[in-house]
Length: 384
Image 1 (cartoon, one colour):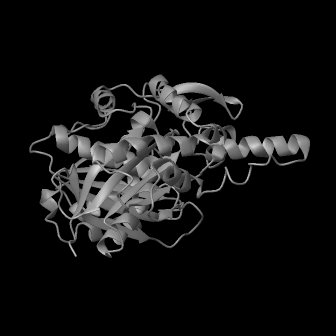
Image 2 (cartoon, one colour):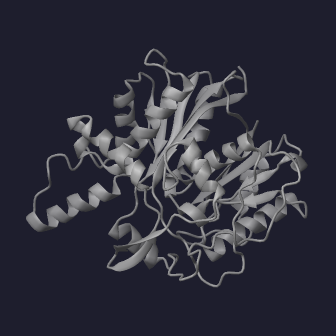
Image 3 (cartoon, rainbow, N blue to C red):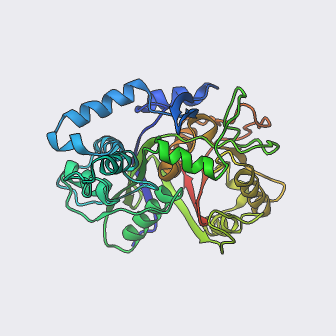
């Protein structure tokens, strides 16, 4: 059984847009995607889908009467899955698995159903089936008319990369030849924002860039939430249409001191990166797309873990959360998309307010990190 895993398509919808052209164009400018909305009774910075992407979602919702009752997180996943399947050249005759996860699931819909229950004392008929976590993969499977296994899971902010791990495991075990993997999140709701504020990690910055991801000298937490979804098509073996290859995978969980803790040198990241890089010359890693959510400890501990692994010869470091915020369970796959685009265009996309880094060689290997509450770290090494 071949150990090579090809990524034959990737598709996303986010504040950056929904086409490769618009997404890359937005990555090349130094503007963030945050706008202020009244959430949790306060003006709040969030990164919402752009107007064109919302039109795409609205059209999908109206395309089938059954889709009108679905949460945005499900519709986002359906939209990108249609596009990825088409781009990979898969048809309904192909047998492929689906593993799309979410940290929060049908957050918006659940909050609305619960508010209705508090007012009326009755739950609506579709409250349960439209808010279960398995809702995402099952509706994607229905929409694509697929016949393979359907899997959903939640491993907080590393959910999408865990979906990639799971797809790789199925392929390497010989239980499938193709898998659709990724994550979807629509967390821009009052209660979700309130939860982040309760943790004292949400940004109230008035600076030009309100999310200061990769600013290791910031004095306050600056995490901001974004929404979106992304999936990629992976296949066993080296294919002619591969966009990139999954060269290494790593994962680790560290012992908790409290519910959202991570150690001072992010032991979980050290372990996951070591595993992903065990067959790789460290000097060959050109870029790391960090998890870096914009919190003081989150950014700094990951940076220290990278220093522990790479020493003084660090790869170029970047993140997209200064621009599109933290999309929870979808964040890892959006980071993978950035990694693939940097390799395709051979252009490093940095953080405008971070210490300048100079690209001195072609970008051929990129490491992507993600970690969630509970210290569940994943590292994926991609190569051309």
